[in-house]
Amino acid sequence: MPGFPIIDCHLHLYDPRALPYGWMKDDPILDWLHGPAEFEAASNGVAVEAMVFVEVDVDAGFHMAEARWVAEAAKTDRRVKAIVASVPLEKGRAVEADVKALAAMPQVRAVRRLIQAHVDEPGWCLKPDFVDGVRMLADYRLSFEIGIYHPQILDAVELVKRCPGVTFMLVHIGKPGIKNGVREPWWSGIGELARLPNVVCKVSGVLTEADHRRWAYDQVAPYIARAIECFGYDRVAFGGDWPVLERAAPYRDWVGVVDRVTAGASAADLKKLYRDNAIRHYRL
Image (cartoon, rainbow, N blue to C red; front, top):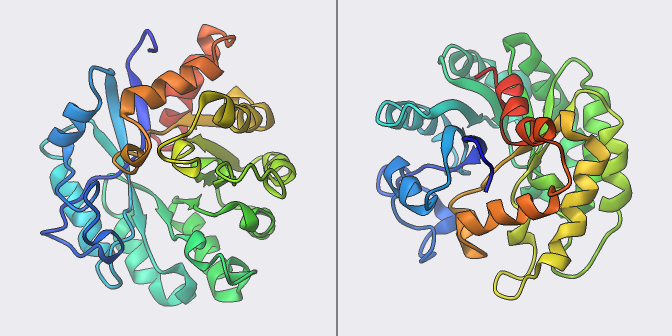
């Protein structure tokens, strides 16, 4: 484990009794309250100093309610320092009032709209309204979180190129096809994405892209190492992806995997990965 308190920049908190999350209905791992107290138990002794909440794909029409719910939850655990909210950016400027309202909330730092939900629609994130919606975030000092599956990585590259005034965070290293041993187009595409200076990469969500029950370190490590190699320690940040992570492993095991991959890194680089870059990117 790191020898210092870490910052987890990808954490999901929610209560399915308070807001509707249709995608997780009846999932025995996910479909129940996951709040700060539950995370404290699940983190199993890992010293987490601060957390960044990331939207949980709440049902349509409830994205503002979700942000407000998390802001309230943060009052019970002051470690929740930032919010990545959901906004239907595919509506373009029609959602500017929501973006403005979110930007007025003290903890909101970014927006995520799941591009991965449209993996069967090549070019979905390049439609004019969506691009306009992403560009609009810069007007409110908000960044955008890129949530894709690996076949969409070149679309993500083009989206970033079309929005030079926006800062981006690639979520879950772009969800490579680890389970099936697929490297392209991800392996090349992440290199292209890393060449764009306004993108940071979140080292998170990797184990759940492998076989949940039979993943092995040697299977996942090359993908993590590739992401860090491309972005360098100045532009990577650790994320736990709890509780989705628990489909594949306990929280402490994931931290152990990242520790092992980065065993040769300097103390300064490890602090960038586990703390400093998150502080800078999310203005903690």
